[in-house]
Length: 172
Image (tube, rainbow, N blue to C red; front, side):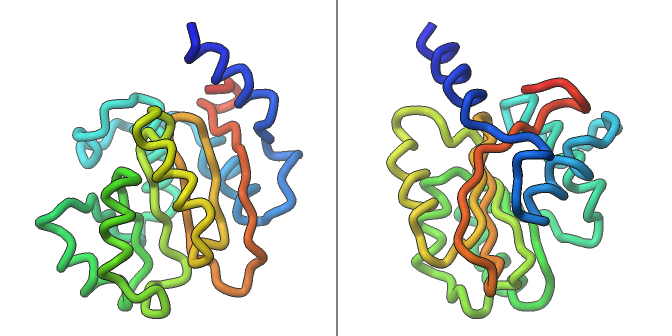
């Protein structure tokens, strides 16, 4: 019951493509989330939320030249080596990202990289998610209810969005 109330409050704050004033946020809503459903990729089998998995499939189809890095303890060194060379889509929990941030130099991070924080809403992780939003290294942050998005985007003013990234014209 409480989850329904949280979702209704989120929808009240969330913007679609016509409520955003950021070209990157508009692109996410219009070009990525607005795609027709794509074939199911086997890359995201460890993501439990179907809506997060569907968005990740669409994001991967929109920017196939980005490397996907689902980070955990074993993949941290690989991520640190890759971050300078090419833009990546990092997929991790908010707690993992906070630990990961201690090991990376944000000046070396590719400016177009995107961090997808799966399921930022559970009460345990809420503190971590808000700490990530407030971090000055991330100039773009978006709460999509079932997941969160972060990107360094240097040169852009720091902005936080609540985005409706539903299936086509449907809302999440």
